[in-house]
Length: 222
Image 1 (tube, rainbow, N blue to C red):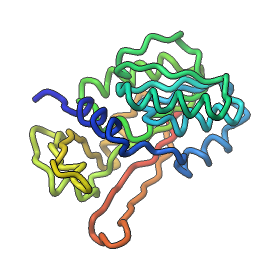
Image 2: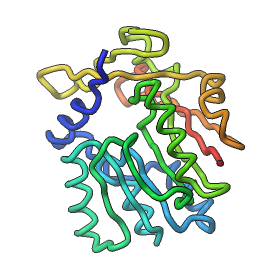
Image 3: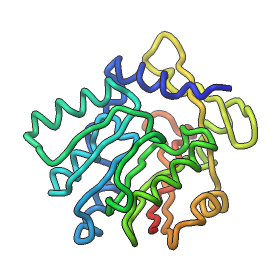
């Protein structure tokens, strides 16, 4: 089955939904903790550019990449309004980026990997390793198998699920393809990195107890 996520996400962004502007606290913390080693950063699947712009505001030369033209245009406008000149955005599929190898101190893929097909996950991880400098940091999330969407989704094959994700506030259900991991699976996926540190977060929104959004929070060093 063709991965429908690119079309789904661009549709969402075009509707003005999911254009997140506030950085995740975990990303803020990791950037602050590792700031002394970071002068250039890459944000893959950047969406509205919340983490790309955060890096730029911290004085880090930053590039954001997203497959959605609507999201990239929104991010560019925000950068202009913030008068940031150390940031740029690229509209393309993240697996197709062509940038100088070993030129980034950090690559961020926050909320991206679990939407890529398994083959593209491997392609992207190889690309991330080639783009990172020696001892560079890969900061990412993977969807946890404790996420309730896994139980409610349709298992297509192996660890691949068709999920009714964007149904709230819309007349028509939008579907996405998602992957989910346990700890062993996370470590296997990232086994080619020299060192990884893991965290795990489960969020049950107000008024929706037992509806769990669960992520692995990852710092992986080249």
